[in-house]
Image (tube, rainbow, N blue to C red; front, side):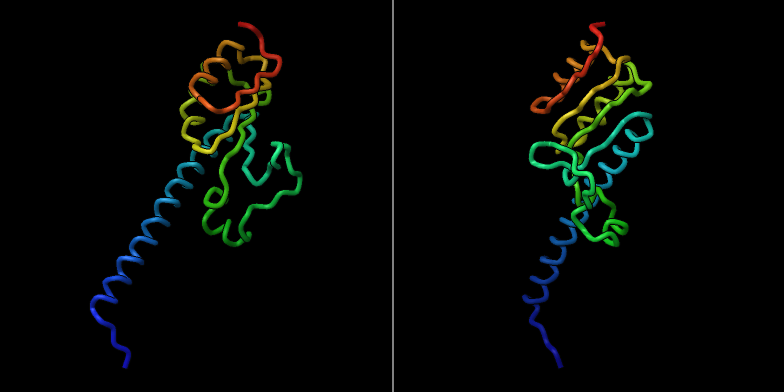
Length: 147
């Protein structure tokens, strides 16, 4: 018959609780990212790039695969294993007001490296404001009108 001392059982319960708490915390962070990505992707012309899809020079890797087995990504979600690295705004229907509404979503992505804007409806002034609220992150402004 297998017998455990009370101290051993308590140590096991504490260790298991810590591991489950850490898993839950990571899962909730991934879920928030997944909700943010879903909201951004509903906006036509928004492109999301995950960290595994970019090389060390931030160049897109064509056939990149998530860093976990497909069945596990299906079970827990891609956002559990990967972080959003870049967001691209490519000829969306968005204007300056929409970019202002998008800003809190972009701020909620903790590992976001930058945003690329290729949209003539978003002004340079509005993109510069975005740069101010995303410190330490790149905001690439491509051929934007002055106002």
